[in-house]
Length: 142
Image (cartoon, rainbow, N blue to C red; front, side):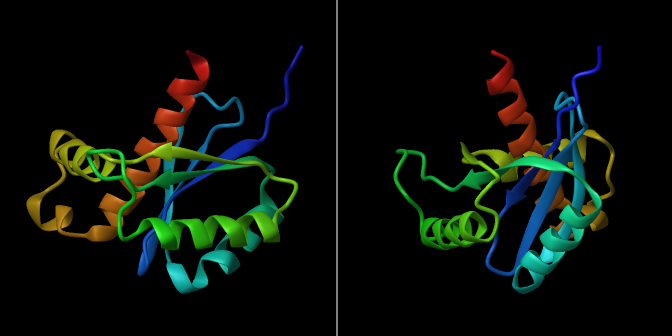
């Protein structure tokens, strides 16, 4: 008996560019998908949804170490409002992203990515989105 689940699309939202990750259809593994210039993000999402079934969105929520909002929080909130308005049938989960950029950078080092390539912020954004999504998967399965 096959249980058809849709993919989950996750975002590491940034004002310049946004890292995007996706799960497999069983929602067990997160994969880096892409990085999109933030001003074209909704075009990217629309194109992706026209070719793939997505069950929900996960958005990284920026927080300071003391769990308070950051300067970026208002932009993430605006993005989530627009996402919810544009796709009212798709639930959106927020997940704490406090350590994702440093974890992403470390994971690039650990996987042997050359120093020159680690300066590529798009790689870090994609890796961050993947870590956000994997955190969501892990939290869901607990």
